[in-house]
Length: 153
Image 1 (cartoon, rainbow, N blue to C red):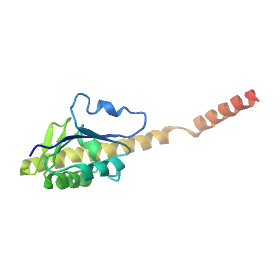
Image 2: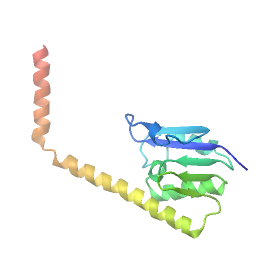
Image 3: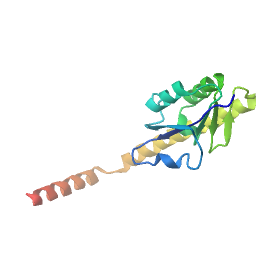
C-alpha cells in the first residue's frame, strides 16, 4: 500500500529557516514546529501523529529534529512503525520500517544516543559561557543604556 510522503520539520527558534531542512525533497504534506526538541509535546508533531496512516512515510532531516531524548526517539519510531508507517532520516541516511532487524534497532539506539549527548553537551557549553560573563559587563551595558535614555530626554 503506497501512502503519502509526510515531512516533519522542527526549528528551535523563530529566526531559523525551516525550509532548508527538507529542501529539494518532495512531500505531500509538511508539519512544522517552532519549539525545543527536548519535549515531544509539540502541536505539529501531535497533529502529524494523528494524520499519518499505514503506508505513509515520514521524512525528517535528522533524528535530533524529531527528538533529542533517546527514550522519546525510540518510542516515536516504534509507535509509528508498528502502525505500518515508515520513518526516514535524511542526514543519517536511515529508514525504519515495521520489518526492522536487530541491527536497525541498534543503529537507532546509537544514533539517538549521540543526539541526546549533543543536546546535553550544548547545555553544558551554554551554562559555562553564561558563567564567564562578568557582572561588570552587565553593569557597563546597563549604564550605557541609561546614558542613552538620559540623553534623549
